[in-house]
Length: 364
Image (cartoon, rainbow, N blue to C red; front, side):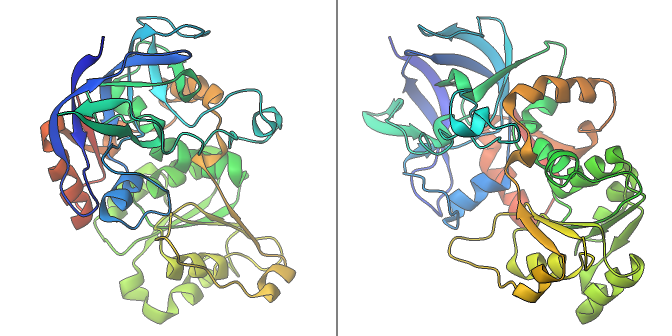
């Protein structure tokens, strides 16, 4: 029997989502039914809504990939989850493919196999797809067991939903993908929900110089509270931004990160990395079709350019990350500036477009 629930449906790009009742298919082989406790509003979903995402998504769709909740029912063949378990939605980890078997791989071969999936919901007789094979912008969702991670039950849903993507990507970009070391100098371009967590990751790794770069001066206070040692506004620095940053880091930073999703800041981040050994990590997602120009000389001189997905973390590592959260090693509560009901999801994304707040979370 289908499960009657409520979801925010995106019928086409450029239009507000519509919140209405849908019929959700029950869990099949290897699938799990989750009652959503909280779902984060991530910029990746905004790109899909605005039609600029490089990720192929078929409309109509229920978006949402950040989410946490309680398992209600499991399908046949589900191995490690049972009703009552608390779970976080995350990138898939099948444990069998070449990436999952690789010691440093976190990009399961099935990652994009379910981005456009067979319809799992219907509304008024119309088929609705689940974005990213998850679809957390609903009071219930069904997904494959490899996209869920069981975690401790005392962790708050609003905070651990942030670990589905944004917070984990930021922290992991510093401590896993870039492997920031003690005493390092770090520059972060873009202090949104991911960039502020790169600051936390750099602090946790022992970096001594952490410079946050953002056009919004209101970000300076929270950046410093999370571990930044300096804040630079590009609108004030102007054309001399890279020169100023190189001066502040005595020739360039050991590690730079781009978390704004702009080609111009990606090139600035690479230019601000130290010749000889500086590592520039691209975290932000640029609009579809845009490319970055890289001079081979920059790479020959020892600068390194890399990207990261989910900060290099695997789903199986999330329980440890939740432990770190509960131990107070990093702060997510201060970054969640809005708790919204599902019915106000469009208001949350309007605020994101205006650059207001830090992180909005739907609570159910």
